[in-house]
Length: 100
Image 1 (tube, rainbow, N blue to C red):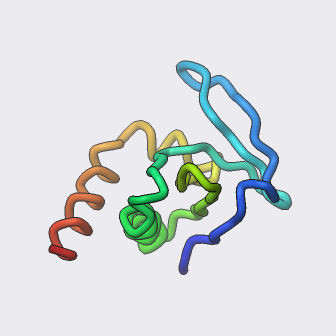
Image 2 (image 1 turned 135 degrees about the vertical axis):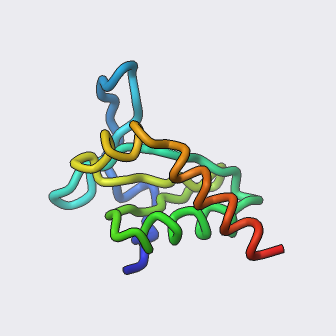
C-alpha cells in the first residue's frame, strides 16, 4: 500500500481538538490528521516517512504545495499513532539510516 500524493488545493483543511488544536483535512469521504510537515527541499524525507507509515498498513497520504509536504494519517487511527509517537520516530530513523 502506497500513500496518496495530493495537491493541497484539492483537500479541505480544518482545525480540531485533541489535547490541543490540531490540523485536519478531508479528502473524499475520509478525514485525516497531520502528523508531520517537511519543507519542499526535504520531499524525499517526506516520501520515506509516509511510506514507512503505509508499510505498517496505516492509511496515510501526503499533501504538497509550494512551501511544504505534509503527512496525514486517517483520523480513525490518529489516537493510536499519537499515543506512541516513538514508534513513528523509530521508523523514520530506520528509513534515514538505510538510505545513507
